[in-house]
Length: 145
Image (spheres, rainbow, N blue to C red):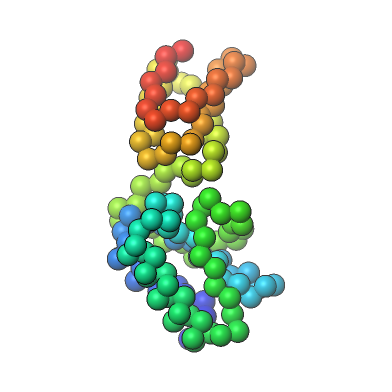
């Protein structure tokens, strides 16, 4: 079994144990580094069950493939995945936006737009309508234009 096959096998098992997550995997052949991106950030940073899983997986991987590097990241990391080799989403995964102050662009088709952002506190939302730009930092927002 290759290191990539080993990782993909483990990620398939992972998603059943953590159905509210999405994982993406990339193998950077130049540096021989395997990147695994885990979202949402709350799981990656704060879920003790996940942290224990990652630690165990890291130990298993480095024992079986000592000359290769594995790196776990989330979507708020300074490095990211450029070429997704494998992606899997859990049955309860609901995409949210990153906590790294990304701008979400929304085009208006109706007079009122409702934005519900209960999962993130540091997301800005930029509205553009007839060359007017407005930026908000909402938890929940209903805007009438």
